[in-house]
Image (tube, rainbow, N blue to C red):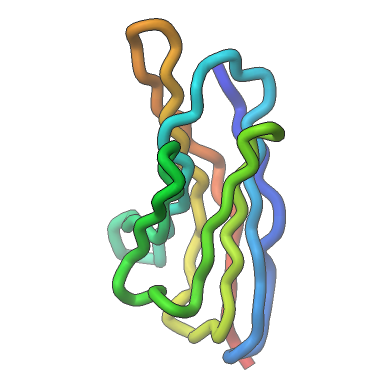
Length: 119
């Protein structure tokens, strides 16, 4: 079982920047997709951004132009840099990775880190 280690998050004023990072320690598989989802109170968990193994990245329409996702395959980490934050970005952000080991793909979730955008 792989335990994702999330860091970052916290409280930030509207318009400010914040970042969240996720490390995948001890995995011997190949990192396919590494990304972030978020879940606001009373809402479903939605994709924010994903960094794919081919170097491409996908973003939710609501964060395009404001958020940037990056991954470091040497360190098995993925970072989400969030700029121009809005109150509606407030949510628990969860790291999500898809790992290929042999012929199997495994999906792992982080526990989540709170991001609050408020003045």
